[in-house]
Image 1 (cartoon, one colour):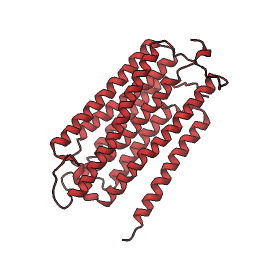
Image 2 (cartoon, rainbow over the protein chains, first blue to last red):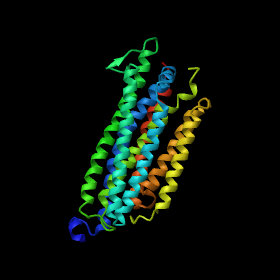
Image 3 (cartoon, each protein chain N blue to C red):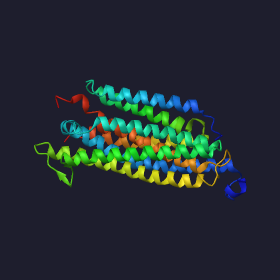
Length: 218
Length: 93
């Protein structure tokens, strides 16, 4: 693939084009940080306002599935990083394999998330749909589940978009367009995928872990 | 500038570190450390996030201006959190 077909005319060279694309993607990710940051902040404030209700409600979190999903998602970040490396080395076949592995792990994550959502439904702790907890703290406990579904739901939407982007990359990769000179699309989608991983790295302890030491005396 | 030199081996090492940190944070969640549980969990999450940003997202070896943007983004997030939390923590009624 000659550089003239992948270099947009406003850039001096491929390196400048790549730096500009990377910077542009980071600007987008910064808006995403503020978007998720607002939800994390809301969660923090409600958690500190109603510590008892949140500690009790935290016991409904499935730590085992949450931990498994953390491992799955971090592993998918590794395969994504290796896909970027392969595309840069012009290894078309291993790029495809690592992209497929990333998609596969992403789908496993979403499936496990679905299992967790089903658990919540069976336990009648889905706000708006079926919420049957009673008692003086029930309203505040419902707040935790609102945050849980909002934050993990938005995270899952980002995962689904990511799987779509990876599918697009596999198609693009099949044309043999990626090389040491031009692998920007793989790098950019990689940045997005790692960002989604980072959001989960913070969601996991905040939603699943920080109430667990109170088990038994909450 | 943006020539990536991070090797396959480095990626595996970072991955191993992330796994160890995940095991640590999950294990420590069941040990009662009082208020320190939250700080420990958040500290580990920050370390994990930083490793992903520096190595998987190549910020460690990317153009300087990108690093400035990333730092500015997190600084803005810090403003959001610090000002809001200091408001809620100092309300008397």
